[in-house]
Image (tube, rainbow, N blue to C red; front, side, top):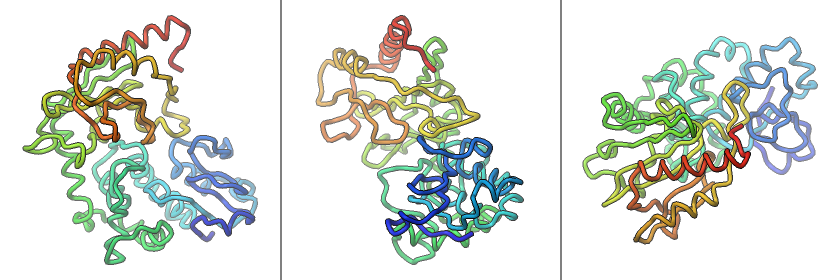
Length: 341
């Protein structure tokens, strides 16, 4: 097997499309719309690749094609490609590969080292962010910012096994983001940050403590929601995230962080039309420049309370009030025959 990052010159070449999906290829991907063979499907593309390289039908499934490609750089993509190129060793490291892929693509916490390895590779606990600082590992190896995905693969792929098996050596790459995750988890453990589950609506109300973000509190220009901690503690099919901000609350409503992908084990989550809910919430806002808006700028985002430029703003509504409006709207949808899944 050999890897070449996707470019238009490969359009007419038969290839194996790993993680990302491109045309004229056999898919081994969990992205929506994939055509991955059913016998190797799994929740992450890394596990799909592991199923493929361990399958007695590998040659038939790949049709003898040796060229592997992907069209983006993130932890799951890197680990999927590495698995295809290093089949025997990858199977031995299965228990390290899958949790790291889940940490990168789904913001999930299986164990500390998996999260740390993913941070070293992709730099964030979300696969797609507005952060343009690139891969910490690629940047270190290049001696500067790497903003080219193909180059990032060239640098990172030879280091994957070492990152997975000796992640402590890369502490300088993961320490900062890991400390933020650790602080968030500790906040939930001691009850400063909380999760309230509303089983009737499959809604999780997550209230994040101010001190999670440091002495000055939340700053939407600098801080993101604590995705890994939320994923660990929230169990609903819709997350209402409330963060103290200025004289009110910053809000975002997300689907579970795995739900953007096609999953086999994790339950699939229906995307809903929240236009009426947005209207209901905006009717209750009494003043201020912000508004509730539908939001699909991130893989699992549904709604946010924002300024006209899309930045989070402070709402005057209390978390319980917002949760009540959501529950009422979901109940009305259910009564009209629109059900979850």
